Length: 245
Image (tube, rainbow, N blue to C red; front, side, top):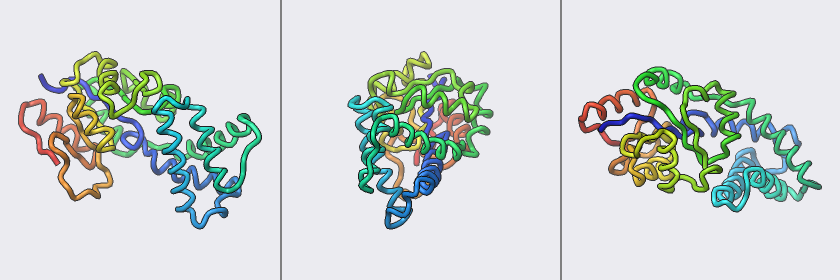
């Protein structure tokens, strides 16, 4: 059988997370009078990213809840400037001010709505994300995307995260189909594409930067814009061998 459902990643696949975070962090640190504490804005961004990745890994491992991982990010980052906050209420308020700056820059990629419109009658669409369900639901609703997807599965509710095969199985269960009838579209080669491949889905790697000169790994279908997705799926649906790379 061919592909009957599409399962999507969210951040940096549908939603331009990287740009929103970058602009939001710089705005927030400037508002808080902290940007001058670092050698350069790029250095501040790099340290923010390091602290985020550390705390987020603990969230994905189940060591911290979603709110607790945010508090850990604040503690780590402010600690780099010798600052601390008196209690969780102040910590949550500080992170909340960052969130408002971040949300000011929320945007979907320009190729998203055209491809969803082009494929809306051919496939049902679902979502699988390494994040919090309430957080992603709110984001999708604000971006006007939530109604376009029949299912939303996030790591916080299933107790595992991509690239684990169990996470992809949960995403497929949300679409009520086995893995071999589902394509997964995501921006990360290891977490999304290779994880999906190992779980038996058809992996589509949306590599917008197009900076890797090496061919995509065997079995992984690489595209540089979502405008190429309908053509790729049409080739697969008709039983031909699609180009890989």
